[in-house]
Image: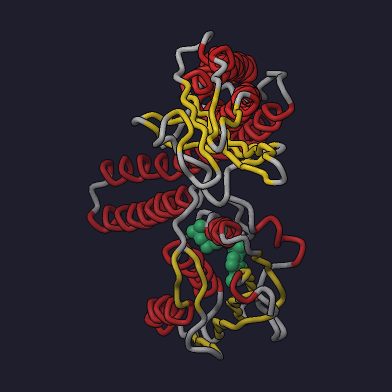
Length: 460
Ligand SMILES: Nc1ncnc2c1ncn2[C@@H]1O[C@H](COP(=O)(O)OP(=O)(O)OP(=O)(O)O)[C@@H](O)[C@H]1O
Ligand SMILES: [Mg+2]
């Protein structure tokens, strides 16, 4: 799912913020509860002390003259209930609620000599304070416990009120942060809107650089788009030049076809008509070749789909396709490869086109009795293909020209439109490789060397 930039910013900012706020709120609640307990515990303790002060001895019996004022201290200002009891050292009840829980072995907290803990009494949660005191009788001490309990409604209410207070502040903070994030994301996205308008306003032919100055992050994108525009402009100009060249190249054979048809139509002599038709056939063949080459050339202007290909097999297929033509021209065509399985990621169709053009040249321009050898081998992280002949070759000064479109070295050659080497070079470039025209190893002839980087073995 693709979220908008604004939503992404808000989600990534708010989720951690809300989680942190929830944790803080929980911590605040615990602290508030602790503070409330401390405050109310002091009052409980004071009540327990006040009761203990009123415990007296009536003969052997303990008695309590209960100071109601002490308990009122606790209950007057609150809705909480207060319970108490006084238990003598032997466990018998002196006064108060018999079932009121006493401190077990380990009370929750000990503050001075008082034990504090939470318990349940009459189906309510109560906070209990318990102290132990004694009265001297002659040389003997008579011990007793005072237990005072209070329901926790007020404490909980105070803790809740404090939590709500903090919670509302956190909520306000979250809302302010979301609003700030929303506004800042909108501000940051404004240059993108400007870029969008600037692109939408452009005509199809306008490939000049975009001029939108914005934040450095967006400037980087604009620079990348501008580089792409520049490449598009170059390839657009290249395609236009090709179309111009192609229409120019097509005009000549079409004009010549027209003239030859007119000559044939004006002729009565069947022999002469046959002659004209043969010339017509030659021109039609040349035009056909030109159309084929132009079609092949257009394929090299698109990025092909690469697939893992066994080049040894591909080369065998291509060479096999030229055996009969080579035999007819009395040319010795051979294939040499050291490895039966040289595989690379490439476009097999385009590589076949390139190799067919090189073999077409070798067989077309080499006289009878010569030989053409195709080689395939690996060399320092590259896969190399050679097409070598011992024909007339191309003079070193003409080699870079021969690689250009529609350039023919020997205008006396009737067949050919000057696209074969250009096509081969462009196919090799699409494979990030290099095509070079070299002297053949023998005394004369041409060696076309194709080097394609072998990504899998580049580190070998
Ligand atoms: N093996 C070769 N031996 C000698 N000359 C060659 C060889 N290969 C190419 N050339 C020269 O280079 C020129 C350019 O070759 P290229 O294949 O580009 O065009 P072409 O053969 O004239 O036309 P086409 O597009 O029909 O192949 C040729 O006209 C030819 O003169
Ligand atoms: Mg050619």
